[in-house]
Amino acid sequence: MAAADELAFHEFEEATNLLAQTPNEATPRGDQLVPQQHVAVAVDSGGSYGAEDEVEESDKTALLQEEKQQPGFWTFSYYQSFFDVDTSQVLDRIKGSLLPRPGHNFVRHHLRNRPDLYGPFWICATLAFVLAVTGNLTLVLAQRRDPSIHYSPQFHKVTVAGTAIYCYAWLVPLALWGFLQWRKGVRERMGPYTFLETVCVYGYSLFVFLPTVVLWLIPVPWLQWLSGALALALSAAGLVFTLWPVVREDTRLAAVLLLSVVVLLHALLATGCKFYFFQPLPLEPAAPPHQATSQPPTVLLSPPPPRSAAA
Image (cartoon, rainbow, N blue to C red; front, side, top):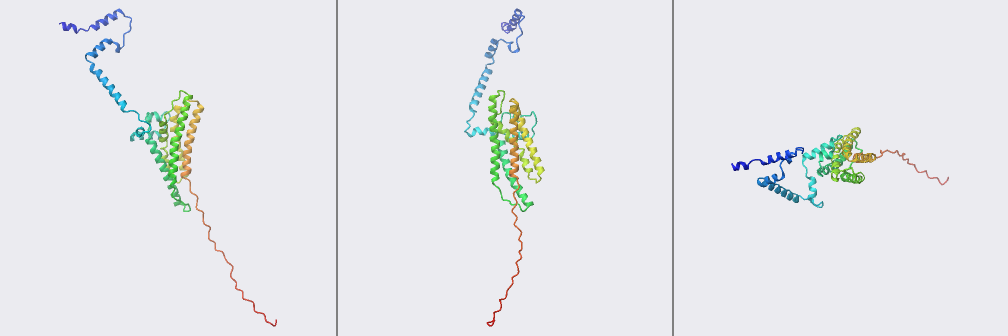
């Protein structure tokens, strides 16, 4: 019976007496019902294993953090993380660049703080190669329709296309990122994207020009310009909808000028590719027709007769 008396819940009686002495005091929250000394006893009696597990988990977390330290930017491992994406992520980001809509931020909804360089790198490489190939094919087809057009393979277009596309996909985001960083110092509420996020946005925005360049093989001028304008509108809209949440914290004049420059540079890239890679070659100078010149008939003159001596 003595053991049964020791098992009585004395803390309930103490709590009742305490409430009777201070009836106006508010009832404690659920996490404060048990005094701290009882929690300590409970941990010492039967919860020591839980405390040990927490210590082990914290030790494992510390070890993992030490093992996964960020490598230096001069190492290959640093850039390897930017190519660590799967096919589903790349396809989702391509779909997001092809279907821009207001209120849908490409960085927040598709990148999710994990920008990659795999998609932008191969999109730029493919676009440069397709531009050079379709530009040559356009001239081949034009020569078949008009034999007076002189054509020779133009391999330098691959170099020109690669230089133009990669410079645009890297230098323009760099300038944009630098400008937003400068404006961040002027307007404290601005929160610009990182440089890699800006490069990723520009790289995926160029994907829409891949099918457009293929459509430019059709020798119909109005169809070429229509497809180019549609691709430019989709690509520029994606850039504007992505940059608007950042630049709207700036002044209205600065926001409008920045977005106008972004759209203008995008339009210059599209029109420059159209005029350079799909311009018709000059016609071969036609040889003047051979005209038969009539020569005057040769007249044979007989020598004059000799004069007589008498004359």
